[in-house]
Figure 1: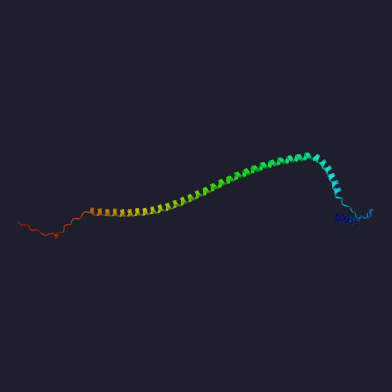
Figure 2: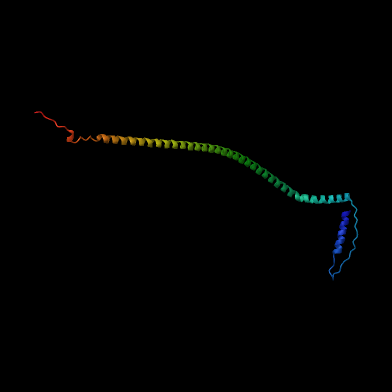
Length: 182
């Protein structure tokens, strides 16, 4: 009831707002309240009958459209299921590839660690060899030095032995006169 009263109030307000243009004749109407008694059963029946006749007309014309739409939607649904299945398979494939790559990465990390350890050991060995080499070089140089010293000494000894002792020169003072007996 409140709805119908507000509708009539709105009509009255709109009628009051309307101002005719000067020079045009205006028709004046007095607004009266309209009270409509509700008859839900008869209104519903009449609206149901009208909607049934409308729906029968629409149903016959749109039944084919609806069947076509249903077929189209069914095809789309099947297509979506196929796409979903293929995407799920792709996900499974990608997950297996990912796990394989993770395995390879872990293997490569372990190999890299082993190589790093090998390089470290090689460096240590190279340092030890370099130290041993330098010690050997020092020993060789010391032996060469002693060999050179010995050879110089041997040469000096040979030179000294090669020199012949000089005979004493005649020194008359050292000699005594000999007396011959006749």
